[in-house]
Structure formats: C-alpha cells, structure tokens
Amino acid sequence: MLKSQGAMVVFSGGQDSTTCLFWAREQFGQVEAITFNYNQRHKDEIKFAQKICTDLSIPHSVLDMSLLNQLTANALTRDDIAIAYGENGNPPSTFVDGRNLLFLSFAAIAAKQKGFRHIVTGVCETDFSGYPDCRDVFVKSLNVTLNLAMDYQFVLHTPLMWIDKAATWEMADKMGKLEYIRDNTLTCYNGVIGSGCGDCPACKLRNEGLRKYLERRGR
Image (cartoon, rainbow, N blue to C red; front, side, top):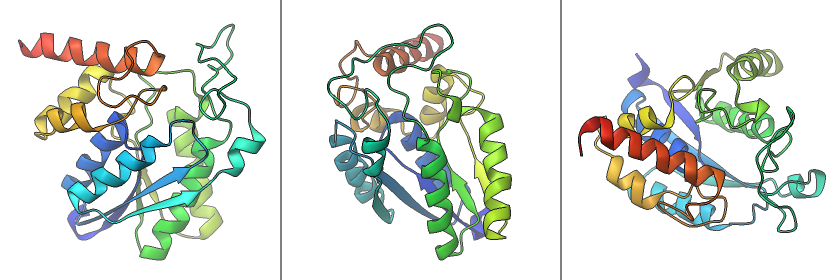
C-alpha cells in the first residue's frame, strides 16, 4: 500500500508541482518536498514554494544548484535573453539544459536518505513545451539509470504526463484545491503570482487551460 510509504516531490511552487504535491499527499503516508535554487531570475518562486509547504505542514528543503546559471544560457536565469518559443525544432529560450536530469537525480539522492522509494514530478508531455526532459521516455530511462546507479528501487511518478492543462485544473478541483492553486502558485516566467502576466508562454498555457476547464464545468 502506498499509504505506508514515503515520497519526495520535486517542487517549484508552480501550478503543476503544487497539483502533484496535493496528489502525493493523497497517495502516500509521508511526503516531503525539495526545491532547487538555480539562480532563476524570479526568486519569488522559492518563497512561494516555502509558503505552500508551510501552509500544508510538509517538510521542505531548498538545494543550491546555482552552478546551472554558469553553465547554460537561457531566459529563465538571464535577463538579457528574451522569452521566446522554439523554432525549427529547437527548444524555447526558457529551456535549461540538464535541469530535470539534475533535479530528479538529486531528489533521488535525498529520497534514499529518507528511506523513500517514490519521487513525484510534474513534467508533462501532453502540453509539450518543447522541453526534451519533460518526455515520458526520458523519465522512464532516468528511472532505470537511478535504480542502477544507487542499487535502489525508485519509482518516478508523473501524474500529469498524459493530461492537458484543462485536465490538470480538473484534477486540482476534484481534490478540492483549485482555488488554492489558482491563487497561491507561481507559474509565470516573469514572476507574477496567480494568473501571472498573461503574456508569457507559461501564463497563456495555464490561463487557457483554466478557461477551458471552467467552460466545460459550466461556470
């Protein structure tokens, strides 16, 4: 039974990871969250992640991964790079090379120290943003690699992998958490909480998904 087991949630404080945090609380008896400081240009996401974990009484740690800022040029860590969609098969300017590879690897290390075998992350292939490290094939391959590397049977959970943003809002609503997630999470690339700036790709995806879900629900 999963209720007798523990899980580590990779947690950014955004819509997807917060939905996964609530999902994990329903699935597992013990849940902890880990957030990564990779010199993202809107540090408020760390502050809101800490607040959410405080609200939910979930143990939370923040790990310094600021070296990523020195190794990769991207719009999430540098003000001089514009936020832009990917073109000609290239990822968008917000893609951070190696981010999920490192985050999941360090989350697994932290989980093993706690005796946890379950790791939860909010990556999604349905609303594919062009990030190669959000694909199901990547997560499955890394799961095998982590198990071999540490001789430990991890299970990587991706509750959002095959659903779109409207269905993600529906999941939150069924857990009774839609309004909390709507008001208290930070998804915006420009660091604006809640509905965000409305202009960046993350806000457009989030807000369009909410509109579709509320229309379908009949509000």
